[in-house]
Length: 478
Image 1 (cartoon, helix red, strand yellow):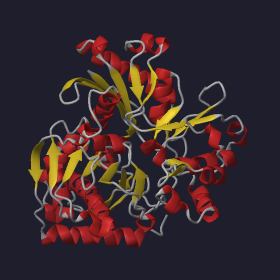
Image 2 (tube, one colour; image 1 turned 135 degrees about the vertical axis):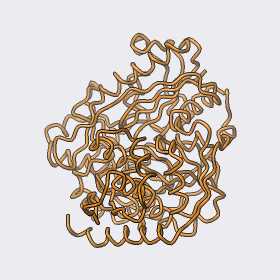
Image 3 (cartoon, one colour; image 1 turned 45 degrees about the horizontal axis):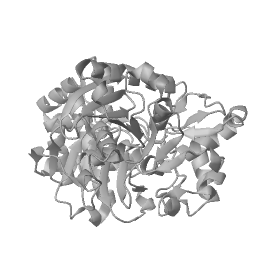
Image 4 (spheres, one colour; image 1 turned 90 degrees about the vertical axis):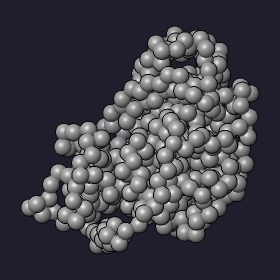
């Protein structure tokens, strides 16, 4: 049995699997703090408390003594700053934090070729400009930094006591030279970061440590079992779907959203804010459109209306599609394809007759429209894919998946266990690290449970055109 731990933004998810079937799973919720506009932070200790709680819940269903290895996955880009004693210096600055916009401009001016080195142009979600902000706004704290980790790697430190990351998570910092698959000292120095602050690099299936006695006491996991490096949530989601081989793609519908296509070479496309990153497995890269808002707007509207996310989708299905406003879903700005940290969300076209159902449909449609924009940003490179698999919590909705198929023109396949996603990928990497699976085994694709073939309509195409025009009209009004 293998354990996969995924450090998400809204929850920690833990699964126990034999590499195919899930034998137990648990989630522990997390909260995000926003002490100032545009800020998004979490306390790393909260990740650890949630991890221990979720592992304990899994341990109540299956014996943790059966676990042979642990794999890690997590939200990308977050800056966890540690001092020489490996103590956390401040709350982690998350992927959807926009405070470092000014620093991004400075970094790009200092290194005009950074998009080719790092696989994407600087945006405030990435880790490197966050360090520039800390140097500028919190210089006394910056002077205490000895180590920088990503969210899942902080949990790795608590589990095995070492400072390590994998190349896919490192890719999302901007500090990785994607072609060389190694840290770029040039980018580090340009972003107020000492190269020796950065953890050692490994591929996702490589063992980076063993469960310590103290971690075993807190989690119930066996002392000494191996922990593999794992991957950023996009890459581990890919592993869960067999998207380690070239020409395979998927969409992820979590708090954020991704359109991911695997390849065997490095092909940067920074002008469209398509990320070209190292994969978590050797000799593989991927291209990805990353949308900051994913299915998050659905959860946001659910909170405002006092209903569940499932109720939002159900109301959306019941709405009269001819009386629905347009919604821009940019609650925290947008990355792909706009690279616009300033744009914000809003409804356009509200009437006296606009109903709750109409608001719900506008929001659900907007999630689909973000994927239509993502597909367009890839250009012709996506045309040869046989289908896009779907994972993440939002993939539970057939209505949303059909809308995405209709607006993108892509065939969507929802796989068995699609909501396990990154945690399953992390567990499969753990199995690979012990020899129970091979790297080629990671390319095995799970069974598709449901297919969603595109059925385009003139009415939906017209709404997509209005959605795009609305962004163009409003983007200067921040």
